[in-house]
Length: 264
Figure 1: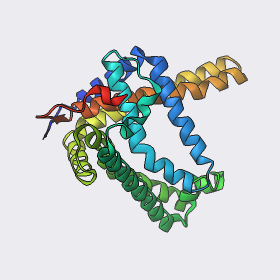
Figure 2: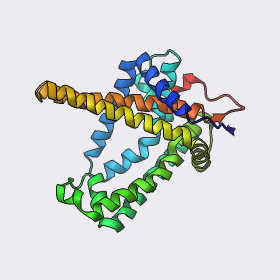
Figure 3: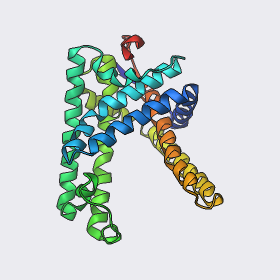
Figure 4: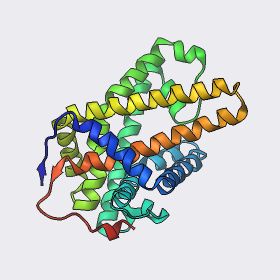
């Protein structure tokens, strides 16, 4: 395995590839993302523990959405079972993915614990669904500082887990090594990832403007407001479809990856 450095402009190509792939199979990829979010919402009903389980399953779910994008790019209609890709490649890789999930959940809960030292646990309580954000809370300096701390800590965490699920599943890299190689690949291609992130940030902002305009022109009708959330979900689905391409271009492999048939 060798790290592959790409120019910064490749970040825009990743964005375009994700959108193009989504529109190859919009119903399948959109539906899979809705299923993923539905599962997260159901887990969120369980106080605290539900959020921890959702965090632990996030690497496997991300891999499932990447596998779906891979299939769609190859002209294959992704079936719902593709979301279980992480658990369909043998006991060893399934165990590795579960370890990766445990590492992610533990790291994120540690992150929340650190923010609690800043604001007494307000930010953590909001994230875990134990409190709602109030205007007074949002305006408090301690809550704002905790938010900035969370963002600063999440960047290296995101880099470590960005490519890790794909490395573990498709190439049999151990969980700990996958975190190292993922971080290294993200650092090496930080320019492309920055352009990628800014590209999606701009598209989400544009989508928000368009949606707000439609709602305003419709007089704020319930139907128009009801269309806002599905629009955001579809944009998020396109984003997840683009993640596969960031992985594909960041590494050069001497051995072939796991056969696409194992994605199903």
